[in-house]
View 1 (spheres, rainbow, N blue to C red):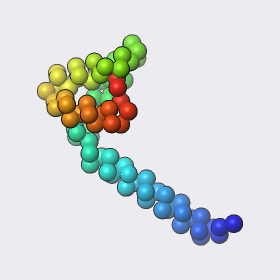
View 2: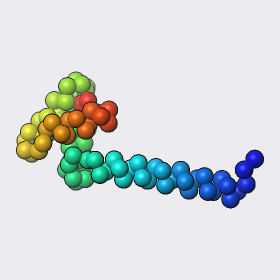
View 3: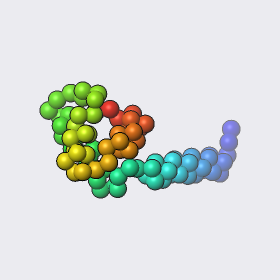
Length: 84
């Protein structure tokens, strides 16, 4: 059985790995954090009234209205499992 120090060391390593993964994910965001949050909030609000249609209708509408890059953003979202 690992010692308390070893458990603490493993926990710290795991936290570091998770933090690095988050940082890499943020670096790959196609939009700045504020705009990405606005997009996700917009889609969430739309989905509270209707179901996901899996064709990114709401995402496309937001990006188009805001004149933001659609292709790059949609590819990133699909890579992350987002299809609404």
